[in-house]
Length: 521
Image (cartoon, rainbow, N blue to C red):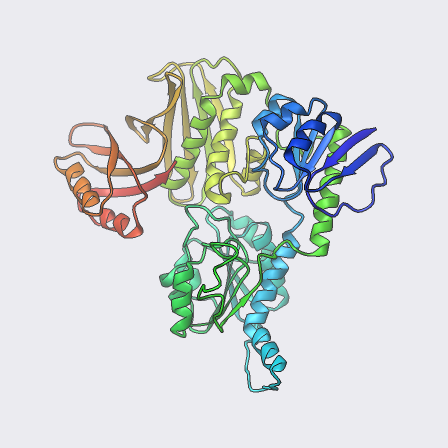
């Protein structure tokens, strides 16, 4: 009989498997978990229980850890892999509930449900309110993942025209959904009577819908955020609502939760609220609990289809421990400095590697996807399938002949617009970027990096440095590379803080630069 311990609250339904003994002990203190975990074959948690190396080491009989939800950020995947403990999750369980809540907010805002309800409670029977219909209107969806795709399917039921912006989704996926996919966010916004966002909160998506974007929407548009607080700039939203450009907004999330009682959006008459309830339905909670329990039992029986950390031996991961963060950094770098929709990622290993270097390619894929899904949303095992889901091809090749160093990792990212390369090596046990495109240099892959392309002539770096200095941005390091004197050159500036969009635009306007890209590593 398998013994399964559940340490977080969830609805698990009825256990019909006589081979499983389930101990449901939600909110168990960590000290107690550490004392008893050695008796169990499997552990099921949500986000409260921290499944770190200490807990995994105490679980001497653990075979499976199940995470009830989307991410596995509270589970140390590497430590689990080293101990041969499989990790599973259920990312699809709350898709429907989150999509339905977005529509609830959209409809409530469009039809004045909350306002009318409040008037009736005050004894007023006001039938003069005129709402908005959805029929033949245009809805824009930012983020066409699982939830965004479900929102699109619902929109078709309302006979709406459906547009989407997602730089990491192939056209084929959008066509299957009957969605018009846009490469330019601004072009999409200008046509949207309704806008809803369904992306993770990353450096790329934080504040992506600001004052400018809100004013690109047609007058009288409705905006919904049931994803993450901060994707829509809250200050800008208040201003645009007050100025009368928007019909209203539906919000399930805030930057700070719960929001301050004096937050201007909390009491705004044009805003409908829910308290981060995207996954909070009886059905979703039952699906999460039942699905993760079923998945754990399947995995205990030997079905590894849903395990997130299979495929790499622990010794190999240990030997490649310095190369994995390098691969991840190169994936992040190229995702941020290469324009267009990713189509192909090619990973080349130059030189003789002691162990099979294939996990490095998975780290590259993880770094690339971190820019799409947010840090921690994927791992070495799930990265490749997620890449395939987005129509991005991953190719690897091993070349015995070394380059400038005994071992070199080269990654090439090809999009529908361009192709760029980055190279790295491990020097003295530390990851280093040793080349970008055809230029050789040496940079530490950490912090904020400005990658600048120019013609090799005097004064270029000086002008850039002056502009940054005038804006209070300190340069922490600089690396230079060129193909020939007077030819094309590239230099990397490591800066202490993220330059604002205004500073980036000013840099791009300098006549001495051909191109400027910002990467956060």
